[in-house]
Structures are given as C-alpha cells and as structure tokens.
Amino acid sequence: MPPDIFNNVFLECRVMILERPSENSEGPSESTSRWALTLSYDGSRFFGWQKQADGVVSVQAALESALSQIAGETVNVVAAGRTDTGVHATAQVVHFDTAAERGEQSWIRGVNSLLPQGVAVWQAKRVASHFHARFDAFGRRYRYVLQSSPVRSPLLAARVGWTHTPLDFAAMQAAAALLVGEHDFSSFRASQCQAKSPVKTLYSVVLHGTPQLMALDLHGNAFLHHMVRNIVGALVYVGNGRLSVQGFAELLAEKSRLKAPPTFMPDGLYLTGVDYPPEFGLPVPPPPDWLWPFEGGL
Image (cartoon, rainbow, N blue to C red; front, side):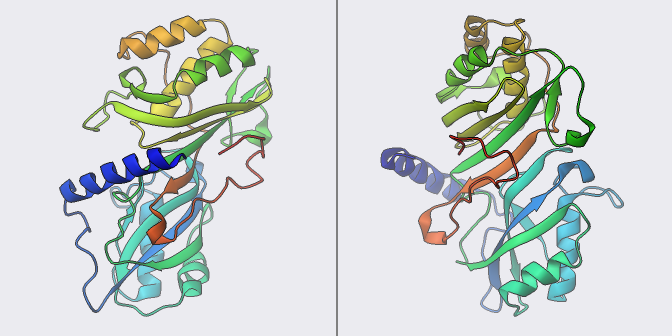
C-alpha cells in the first residue's frame, strides 16, 4: 500500500479507537498479559465464527474452550472480524487477556491438541496491552476462488465456489477493476448489515487465474456483510452475459440491492489477512501456496 494511503487509514483507525466501545478494550490489568493469535479454519465445519447458543459449533466457542483449558481460567477472545457459516480463514487474528504464564508453544501446540478438526492456531505473540484485534485493523484481505465447469468437482466441494456456465474472464476483470477506490457499496450490502456506513475503500481488486479456475483478491479498509459474496454474484452475471460491464458500473452507482444479482455461495471465500500498524509486529502473511498460487495475488 502506498505510504499516503497507509497514513490516512492509520489516522482514521486511531479516530475509530477513540470512539470504540468498551468491548474488551480497556487492556489487561497489571497481573495479566495480552496475546494475539493467528489461526486458520475450515468454515464448512462450523456455524460461523461467532459463539452462539449452547451446542452450536462455532469457531469462537471451540477456540475459547481450548484456550481456557490451557490457561486454567476462562478466556474470551476478540476477532478481527466475524465470518459466516461456510466461510474459511487462512489468517484470522484474535486477541485475549490471561493471567496464565505460558510460552508461545503452549498457545499453539497445546491449544491445537484440544481443538476439533478444521481449526488450528499457527502463530502466537504477546502484544502491547492496548492492541485490539478488531479496532486496530486498518485493512482486511479476502480471496474468493471460483470454478467454472459443467459438473461440480466433488474434490473441491466446500472449498471453491462453482458455476456451470462458461465465463467471459476478460469482461469479469474489466468489471472488477471498477470497484477500486472509495465507493458506496450499498448495492453489495446484505439487508441485515449493521455497519454504520456503506462507504468503504478497496485498495486493490485483482481477478486472476483462468476462465475455468479463478481467484478474486480484494484488499480494503473494511467490508460490509456479504459484500464479497455479492460482488462475486454480480461478476458471475457479467461473466455469463446476464449483466454487461456497463450494467455492473450502473449497479454500483445505483446503491441499491433491489436490482442486484443474488448472493453467491460462501464455499470459495477465505479471509487471508488483516493489516495492523507496524508497531504491533503482526505482518500480513501471503496466502498459503495450497490456496491456488496465482500470480499477482495479494
């Protein structure tokens, strides 16, 4: 990201922190420490990130249970962002406070030994007491992997999105490029979205791969509920000819879901990184090689 963009977003982030609610944001006491974890999970195995009613399997509930056992006390986590049922993550970031004195490997190997299949912690770092996984994030990165094939591959089920229709890759790239910059993304916003403003900034939008297997990489300051899946749904319409590139531009300008294509399936969506100020020592990892190492990815 260019330095001027970083500085602007960093200042905006700091303003948000001054106004943010008190959700686990006061920092640990003198007898506790704050840790940041980076984890990956298979969203198809869970009913979303957020902890829900007893008995409902969520990533947050599984992680807090494992952490609490290792710490010997109740541990609550705050995530950089919530993901829906079926949405995956290769680099979700959370923070938690604990009075337990444990090393990094206890928070990685020890916690992983207690987690169910489908989720794993791969990085643990003691961080400054004022670090906040959600409110200190000034950028988030997503990848959507999409397959176009007459028959859906059973080996890619729940791992990639799928459409049976042939796609015009060049037209989709042209439409995707229109999303870069600051826009009102109301046309790609879920009706239940609780964000205060639909105006978000996308620093980059890259569609790469082949017409048969492609990845859409998006990097922005924040995302609305279902925003990426709604964008993918519209791009698929562009690819199959049901919506022109000009029509896509008009849809963005319309600022309404009334004329928008339906929300696309969650299967191919991955949270691949979260941006934080350098002071916290949490650089964004590249997407893992197994997640289709397309050239030009974020």
